[in-house]
Length: 240
Image (cartoon, rainbow, N blue to C red; front, top):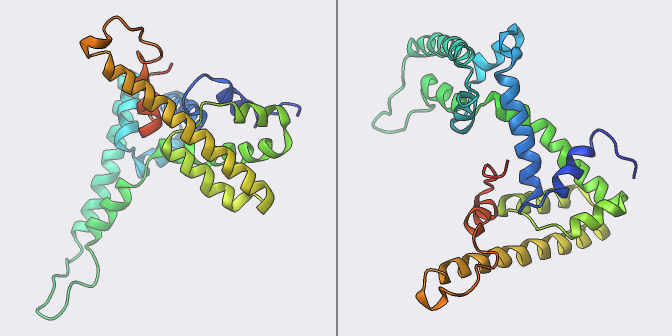
């Protein structure tokens, strides 16, 4: 298949020697979104309106701070905090319903509803998710129509647990019955076989702390803990 703009990131991710190419795809999008947030865009009114309203999740606010644009970070945080203060001042004026002797309060206070909504929103996550969904669609399209990609997929190192689940769930919605059975079988084998491979590397890492194995080679165990982090928790930050 001739490479197109939307297939390049997918091919790049599956070309990497990593424990989950889906994590690699997500990380590339995440790095781009964080850099964008602290690039010239933060001075644009429409972008600032979104960051003021949405804020950032715990993970991404740390990554944005690490961009070391202190003035830009301060400006973004100042106007976001202004927005939160204004919104919560309005919520604070609303009366809070208590429960009576015979029934519970019918609805949660506006303050609580606002904070719940704010906790679930993140400008960086939102910027990532739409493109990430298209990348996942592309994985299925290429698996069915690009033999070279299908071969690369089948020879990959498998996936983290989260993205294994994502692929199976999306396959059920996107593939015909014939394609579905083949894809699920292939993907499940990739996940299980490679999960066992990394588990065995971790087991050998443990063995190397036993004096009986002191003179034995490390095999593939030296970086097994970081690879286990990818398999178990989708953490790929250590790979740059």
